[in-house]
Image (cartoon, rainbow, N blue to C red; front, top):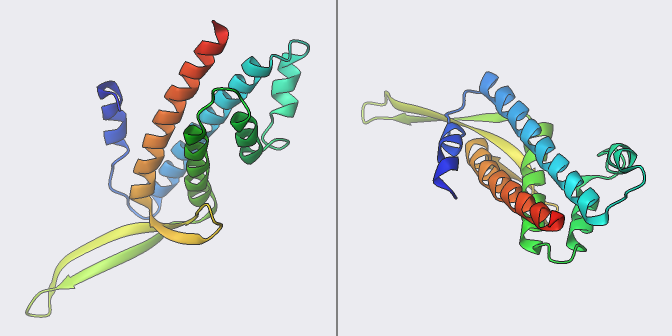
Length: 169
């Protein structure tokens, strides 16, 4: 990870409150996921070069309602030289995105009593449900998933940009 990217990742490590910040996180995750999908679309266009009606190809064929991220990953896997580890990162990114977009965060509150049976500390975390690669839905801590999303998004974005530059040479 580059030092220039560090402040953005630190910003993503904010503490969460149950409702408002979750909605802000959801909006940011969806926006960044869409940016990654747009980069993938551009890469597919540049790789296969549909010279006739490239704009329509982008607008219709690569539309997420027609060709989902899973199908786009299959296309990426068949591109000569494209790293399969990046495809796996895209799948993980999608899983986190879907967990945030489709499941509300569940606040989990931990209350620690002291020796006098009085509250000594209260902590909370938000939990989302994320489907793993084998199809099992498991609870994950939102804050940790958000941090992982940031790292995945950075790695994927950098790789796609560099791969795309290589196609234009």
